[in-house]
Amino acid sequence: MAPLRFFQKTLIVLILSVLLQCISVLNAQSSKEISTLSTQDVAESTFEITNGSSTITTILPPTTTTEIMIVADSSRCPVVILLPEIIATHIGTSSTFKAVIYAYFDEALESRWSSLTGIIDINDPKFLGSKNIPFPELVVNNVTFEDDGVYEIQVRINDGWCIGNNVTLDTIGVLDLDDPCNSSKECDLLKNLVCSSLSQTCVCNNDSYHRNRACYLRTRLRAIFSSSKTTTSNITVWWNHPYQDADLVQSYNVSLRAFDSSYNFQTSVELQTNYTFESYFLPGYVYFFEITSVVFLNDSADTIFVKTDAINFIVELLPPRPMDTNASFFHPQRLFLRLPEDNYNVDWYDITINRYGWRVYWREYYWPEHLEPGTNYTIRIVAYYWWSESYRRTSTYNGYIETQRVPKVTFPSSEFTVPLLSKLEITATVHNISNIPLTTAIKWQKNMENINITDSRFIGSTEDLAAPKLVIDKVDLINDHGQFYRCVATNSEGSWTASAKIIVHEGFEFLESCNRSEQCNTEKHLTCRQSKCLCKNNYYHYNSTCFFTMLNKTDL
Image 1 (cartoon, rainbow, N blue to C red):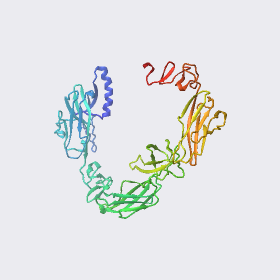
Image 2 (tube, rainbow, N blue to C red):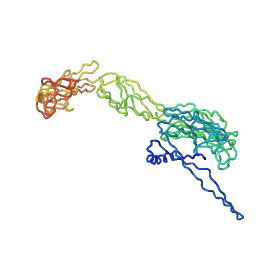
Image 3 (tube, rainbow, N blue to C red):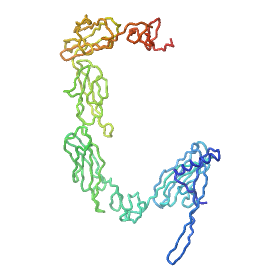
Image 4 (spheres, rainbow, N blue to C red):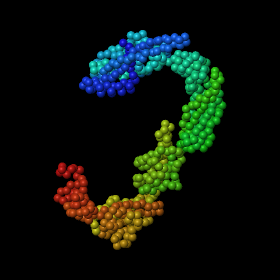
């Protein structure tokens, strides 16, 4: 019987899906089936009609047969390791593929090899030496270009055949340099040969050069980068001659280009192995350097140009400075840093002051922490450049800053809760710090506007330079609730501000009716819920009093 002919895998899958529908109607079986076609040897019948000058040959069409092959459930198929995945070998040699079969579910009962042209007869001289299970091997003898392609092993278990393990055979020609050829495949690719369409002979490919009847990769003629030194005024580069066939190099061309092409310079340096580019180069800027070997090939009398891969240079970085002295200021409550734009392409800064660190993506930054007045702090600034590239860099500044010597004033709390129409007294503290100039003025403010403490509502307030006091008579919801009151202490070097928020409640007690939370006595942890003053969340009540708890009410 003639060998079975297999289609490509994609065609098999399409046929499989069609047959699955048909088979599910005819049999109520769970196995899958596909149809594969095999062709009989082409039968040729030749009829010769001679009229003195012509002969007509008629080829009868081939006949085909169809065989149903049951495909096994892939989840039960053995694991097949097929090696090597690809073999590239010269024409006339032999190649061997080996398979190892691991059966985790159903035992492998039978195996067979196939190609795109059909099932392989391992007794054929072409495949003599091949084996099936338990140790499958496929041997392809005296390989030719016709043997190129994909080979497959199929393994049968109880419910059908397991397919889908492939390897590839690629045949390499044996023709040498200058041998006549019809296609590049006939030339020895391992010797970097291709078939020239002009001369119809094997010649070196475009990535190679010809010397002493052999083809060598042009990369052998590249200059060898050695070292470099970059500053803002010049970039000097050193390199070495190629390790092989350096005598073919006639000269070198060098080029330097900024990443954005704002600078682009190239020149010939004869056979020098170093060069200095002079210009103003921006700190942190990236420049690409290339060396081109100008090569004269004696064998072919051709001149070729062999370029190195681009080499990235970053101009030396200037260490970041803590401030632009004309734009930064060091107030302890509102430290502001303006970092100079000395370097190019800073991705971010990591700034650490007094053990607190923040990542900053802008050159201008307000420090979020309060510092002490008149105090020296260590500051560390690390700048990160080109961080998404392989040539990333960092530079670090370590130094000191001194905060302004302003008077420090504080409140006992940042929020005061008082009943409606009651009197509120707030006493501030101006701290006596030895190296801080004396406090010269105190001002009380409401929402950043100065308060006239002689006003009847503020009778009793003082602007004492050590313990100023604010008195508000009959606090109300309109004028005081939710408002911020501030105490500003000033000396010869600046001011410090203490701020507190006022919360006014109407004093409603537990279970009294309410419309808003401000009506309930917040000092007793009450809030308005369900139109009644009830305990806040995380509080429970006992005898109309709210107590803090971390337990659920149901646990009490």
